[in-house]
Length: 340
Image 1: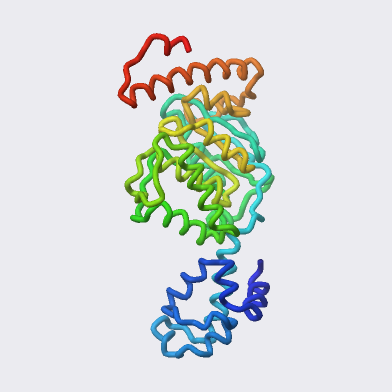
Image 2: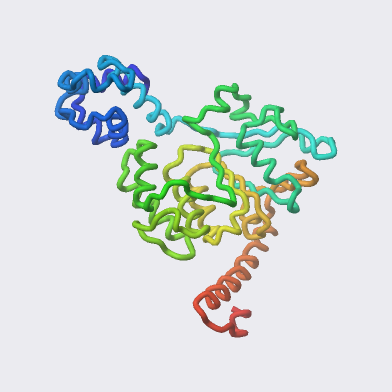
């Protein structure tokens, strides 16, 4: 909604109804230290009962609060709206480490999963970084990223409110000592989720399905293992993030059910690019990009024969999974596990 629409709504709606629909509003009033509002009134009427001196330490006048509250709703509402849609990302090629031209142009459409393969140090992470910053010939590769066929302005590229790209890196550390429940509820509030309770519950359940070891609501996020942290953030990205483009760097090292993780993200109609050395992930993608010496050397559509190969790879992966579980639970390996 626009600022004007929010203003009209706030002027005619009791504050308790607004807070019930958008719990994040509590944060706005807590920041101004006004927790004793008559919420059965509209905000304008409720403010008439508040001492004006209360606002002086924040450098605002009482009559400014209504406008600032509507601006607050507008900013948060922008991130929650489903209007940020991207149908296609196009990469105009630059040069590799030797200055030679790479593949000149290629595109990824919504719902597609693209794997990025190549030796360690070949430039896979650089490609993801170029997409993350929506490069405009201003990175070492000289690549240019188009969104739905057009280059974005600098203002759009660096807009932090409605980010187009979410990235899940190999290293992930939480800086807040919140429980899993507090973390998910905070994210849901800040993103103005329409059905916060359901979204938080679904996100929690999905994260536990992905994680190797289950975790509870009251575990501190700083106490989660690397795999559990990745599982939580993948579920968070799928169910709460409005970013239509998701970049994942080497998910095979995360200790999670990586096939299920990709399926979840794909179902949410996002564009997903995965840097990987894992044949299971590389062959599950619709296409794969081959990186050599810093440049894109090939685009390969996953063939029918490769899909058939994938079935055999999944059987092998099942065998390895069974062996890992056996060892993890303190068991001893039997030869019959190898011919499962």
